[in-house]
Image 1 (spheres, rainbow, N blue to C red):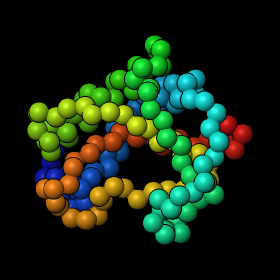
Image 2 (image 1 turned 90 degrees about the vertical axis):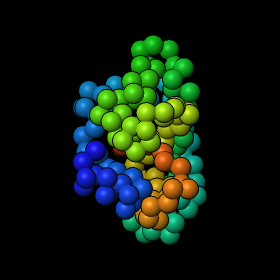
Image 3 (image 1 turned 135 degrees about the vertical axis):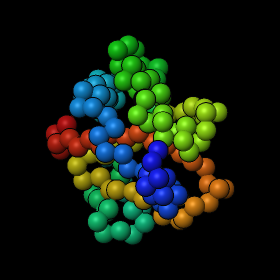
Image 4 (image 1 turned 180 degrees about the horizontal axis):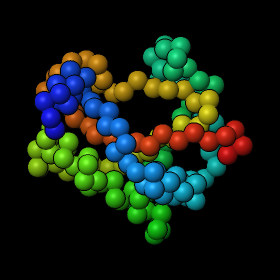
Length: 145
C-alpha cells in the first residue's frame, strides 16, 4: 500500500480499488450467482440509504450466503476471492499477516434497488472499529432477470 492509499484508508476507513477483479472474474461470479441463487422476491426498501435521495430505490437489496459450498465449478470464483492476490496485499498492510476468514455474505442489487451507506465509513480513524474488507462486484440486471 502506498502512502496515498494509506492516507485515504486512514481518513475514510476503506479504499476503493478500481479494476481489482478482471472481466473474466466478474463474469464467473455472475454466472455462479445466476445458476445458484433462487428467484428472489423484491424485498421492501428498509432505509439503508440513511435518508439519501440519490441512494433511494423502489425495493431493497438481496442477501445470499453459502456460495463457498455450492457445487463445483460454481463455488470456485467465490473461493478465489478469499486470497485474491491484489486484495491480499491491502489486507496484510492494514491488518497484518495474522488475518483470518470469518465468513461470506453477499449482496445483490438489481435495477431499482436502494443503495446503502458503508458500515463505519466516513467516521475518521478509530482503532476500535473492526476492519472489514469486502470485494464486491456490482451487478445490474434487467427487470425481467
